[in-house]
Image (cartoon, rainbow, N blue to C red; front, side):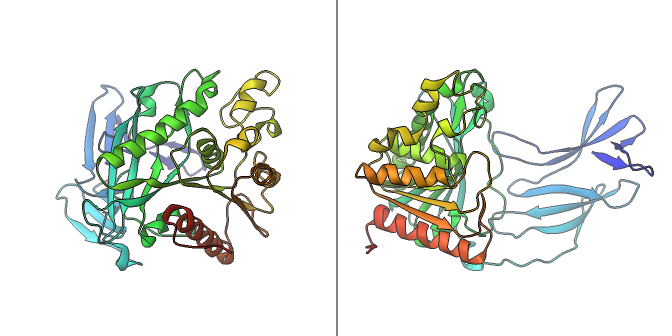
Length: 373
């Protein structure tokens, strides 16, 4: 932790030999934040305050210079975040705010951190949401939302991130809204690409396909989903992943790709963590580009893109050309261009339009209930 001196400089917060640390508290069960102090001479660590079990409470600031009281933000699956003043000696607390649940109809949504393993031994996880009133044994259509990340070793890739004990807000164009339509939603499903940083993209396709299939296999084994009605989606690099999954596997009924890049020859000096240029690794650039495999994308793909996307790797031409390539090869695709929007979508009209398009696409190809003229 840091404090600001009168001259404006930031320095480590220290009381004598003790320095203060605001720890995220990562664990195999998720994050349980802590407030620690460490003796800089002896190395001794003391945990002054820790998040209680079954909740998520993070340190905000000290209440006063004596470090006897702290301000925290407390929340749980069913309790909206509110601020409290906590006495470190007595552990007594006083509520400072009284924010209300903005959508009490959705508080009963089931939320669970699920963990499973890829065939190569890499641990995977995601947060599973089930709609209100779900009955065990009922097989639901599933929507997976993901974003691939790169790691140099499996242990780091398999670390659990976040917490299942946080309160869930339904905002903007979040795929979480699918639970209101009767879908199971696997949010932030881990799609790690593990290997030497110089060459890990050599097996990008195989790794993301295996990760997605492992999630489907696991939830299918629990009797929660109908594996014939699984959709997958992502934004930006997640959209790139989505198009690749449709091109190189038959695990999904449809895909939804937002603000993506699909032709890596248009990002010739690297992408994401790729260090090689197009001229150094032409085969890899071509192999991981869904545009080059548009003739293999047989399942319906919805693409959404802001007309004014200024992200250097995801200019709108990326979606326009993949759409034309899929249609030209007899595939099923829909392209939605959002006026005045950039890489993310902000206008109320755009957000509602995006949700409407996603719901209709999923219902038509994941449920078979909507007929588009």
